[in-house]
Image (tube, rainbow over all chains, first blue to last red; front, side):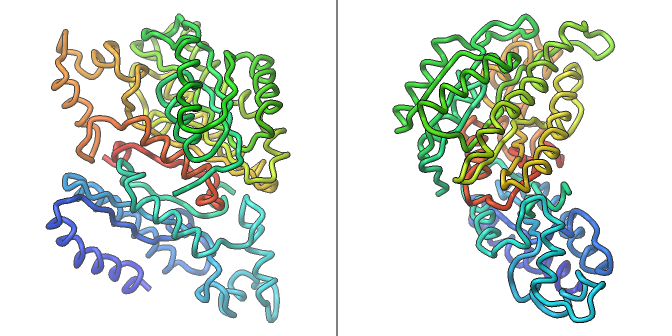
Length: 155
Length: 277
């Protein structure tokens, strides 16, 4: 978990940042963390630790790269409707009370975690936030953790 | 690019500065604008407050940007006045979908233990009570919206860190986080999103004035522009002394658009890295 989520992200940044600096035009780094990067969830400590770690990486990089006008921010999605979330292991994680939970059982539990009346968000919603952070629309936004979380962090 | 076609946005503190910029940017994105402002002096602040002529200028700029506009002089401390202005705006423009609670004042200069009660009350009544009343008046209309409703409350980096010699300002901006998160919880089930933008110093008359310069540069009587730029630069990690009103407006546009349809309860910082430094 840490190898991929945390060390892998660092390797990615390490390989890419010299090119951003060499370009001399500033730039933007966007790290995909998770709502689990800003709060705890039971029974996935390794995932939570890796996603919190990414916030530390984001903040350190934001300080280090700002003199080059390279902005560094992170995205914090709640459940996104993808195969990573919609599978039996996740159904069982969110519905330990059921013997063989399915998609709708998870949807009910997931919806209850959110302030907005939705069980999950779409990949496109995360992309929209990424587009904002990658564009000049956010030219003075750096070091920010942006949730796309249907309000689960305030609930 | 985010669009707000067919939507109506209420913007408080719209006569100039950030509020005017929000009105222009949201109008350019297709929104109709209800622009209100107190347009009156406030004894608690050292800088000049906007005038009715400023608000008229905002209305003209909204129309120039292609938007319809209803504007009215209304002080957010006066719930009845805000209610009347919003009702008239909704009648004229049709419905209400977006609220940008921007009106605020920035008194400066006294330590918390030296501040007069009247000055404390002046800040709390505009920045905190006025913002609550704006949201209170607008929410029944937002509940009727079928086009995706959103509130953006304008906070400040002083709502995250302390602000020496501006304690009441810091207190109210911290308080707005409590209002924002609570509204997000209360209105989320009705599909209304509530978020904050958190600007650092913005190039507006509220921030860029002699009193603020003196606080940043206590040892220099008449600081040059170079002195001022260097002093403001020191609090940021990005190489900029301040941000422009449009930079905050871009964040407001993102948060109020369908691009952010599942973002609620969030503080979006437009702070050039101030709060991570």
